[in-house]
Length: 133
Image (cartoon, rainbow, N blue to C red; front, side):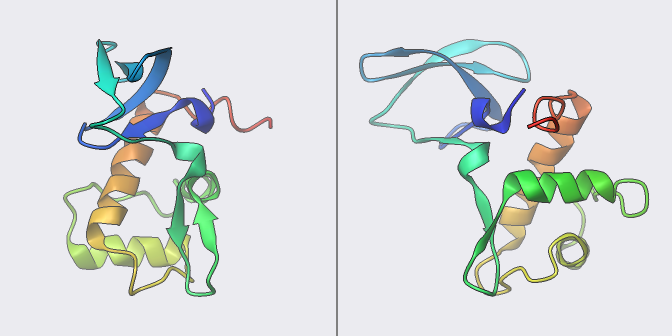
């Protein structure tokens, strides 16, 4: 599955895919349990993982796709910590994966969300569609 097909929806935990569009919102399917629901646009914002990035100190932003690739490359030598790891451990891991992350704009909650998504995508083998493109 491509990162462009995977959505993060504000106000809802987990990751989703858009099933269809309806007037005033989207029908979304939770990737974890397959349940579908209507998510109104007036209440939720929809962001594909492909469009998200992590702040860097050079004024640019590193796309999540590149971060996920680096995390996969380092998985044997430097495994991703659990989301409930200590704050210091989270920042140490991110410094290994993305040395030039912006220390003022990247918070522990951002790293936890990144790790949560990474572990979910890895556990469900959803990285396969991006590697050939």
